[in-house]
Image (cartoon, rainbow, N blue to C red; front, side, top):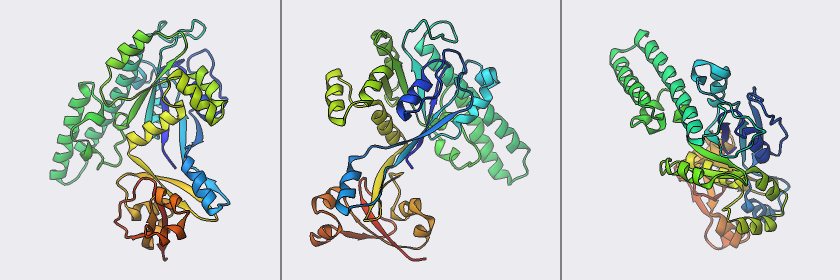
Length: 358
């Protein structure tokens, strides 16, 4: 599994169209607000050319990519945190995702109505962000109230009360939880789930007639760590019909760095701090996603808890060495096949065989 990405934004900004593009689905994308009520979910394979090379070396019967789950969440409007437009229900759907893709409309289309009557990307962006903040403020205020009424050790109660009171002040300044200086302390409160603590990136939804000056002005308002991916769904649909070689030439001609899907995958992995390791043999070659800081023991647990419980050692080699020496035996013959313990920090692209006993 890779990660779960939620598409969030105003109604009629193109979330469902982008969802269809990324997942090759055909959910309704009609011209009226709240066309989407229940969230739509779909899994997409993470493209990785390394898998085919590993599979070929081992003549694997099965090849399994890592996967991303995309969620098309119904449109939010101003007042969502107070229940406007079924807002509370829609906000709750965001709780389940790992990363938020905030879709902002830059295209002009008189046939696709805007809930506010006119298009202002910065206002739309700020309105949704404020609703997320207000939702968190409401959650934290309620949580603090429960803490104050709860019977517990006084020192711990004082610590939590001080922490949450400070967080409330932070949110009242219209700042995301992700920018809170004591966020690590919040992670220790397992039942406090806050929307603005999640990583977020922006998708600027454009068409061939969009105003470049408005897009550039919008980008200039973003902080350095706010990633903005520009997507033209019509062009992306054309790209998706091409072969990999044709895609490369077409993207180069249009001066687009990569496909929308690949940009989103790379951004998600970066924001969540993920890496990929591989298991490969005659039966199966598979890509696995793990936190960058995960050691061999933790990575083995991603495959199966029994492997982590009975962990003996990890036999591993880098992807490049594995391919250049044509597999396990060649890697052993050339002295690059290693045996590592449970605390070994797995590197990006490691090919691993876990030894265990239960």
